[in-house]
Length: 97
Length: 97
Image 1 (cartoon, each protein chain N blue to C red):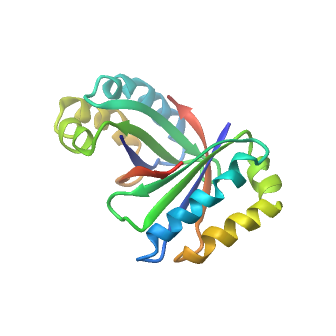
Image 2: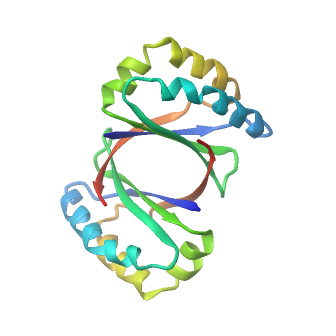
């Protein structure tokens, strides 16, 4: 299991519209191969900064199968118009818990 | 429920020692007031970069009760020697899931 952490800065004033778009896009993640969960976190200290946290079975499920899918384009079409800048995407594995 | 996301950059070469220290510090979190879970994530793209993800019942449980406790000093005594720079700490709430 790996985690995608996408740090997304949203255009100020567009937070509610962005959150609605993410809600509309959730089914695209839920039906993606290897996707085990998705949650949009909003930063308390910087309310226009978000972290999209997605659990994937492995890295390829995100970077190959999802990124090359039409559903990735659907996600970007829905949420992309509200991005202030390109998201910063990293992946993690749990090291200690 | 809120989430603490602490981005921690570790001195290169000290990753294994840092992870061992975090393992030793886990009980300090588990017994903290309002702490509902803790996991140390290691970044695949930058293996000396970590995210400590802690679930707290509310912001004060982290910023007041834990930060003012001896257990916070215990955490910093264990893990702090491996920090390359001060951690960047933010808090989030889940906006969409």
